[in-house]
Image (cartoon, rainbow, N blue to C red; front, side, top):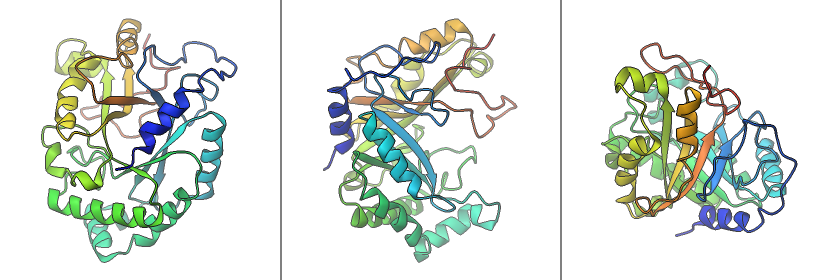
Length: 298
């Protein structure tokens, strides 16, 4: 097993004394000792420390592959590891954006060149690289065309693409990343195809109050998902994290997400999703703005 992601964040942590110029509050790294990363298209965390993981999202079609080299240079300059989420769709509106088309195309090898092209570039990067492919496959909201499949179909497709990528980029680490639902184990592709288990944890105060009648804590959402993930015996990462609400709610989450706890011995990192939500939450809860500079609702 290769754990370059974990080794990479450990190496980055060793050089965190190289701090850059500070950015204005409220954009700041939450307090704690759990290694922290961020998806940060606005560049709010460009010179923030300690940030040891740089998260990227790529569709495997219609993507400018040299951007990976740019991201590698950016990460190297800041002593960060790379987490690359590859989403198996195109941004174009067409029949290609359907689950049926995607399943058939993967089975026929039609997408092999797409994955190979990405992984050829990943093989050349100097930063530690973790590949996160077709995440949140246990989600049932209809958000992703690779989610909610028959587990056997998903596992077959996932294994095919991981095998292909490893053939081109043998030094990558692989993150299998469900949402964390009770049925997530049905989609587990096997120990040989998982180096890390990623989870998604989002706290939306308006949703909590409407659905649960109280403000849920980070631990209330994370603990049951962690328990499911830890059963596989792999390091666990919060691959996507976000929280939005009033000042008290945001502070409660901020003070919890990076705190090392004996209940989570396998937790090795949390990665914040510092971007506006792309897909509307159900039941007209809108598209939360997870960016730290806008997360506090007045």
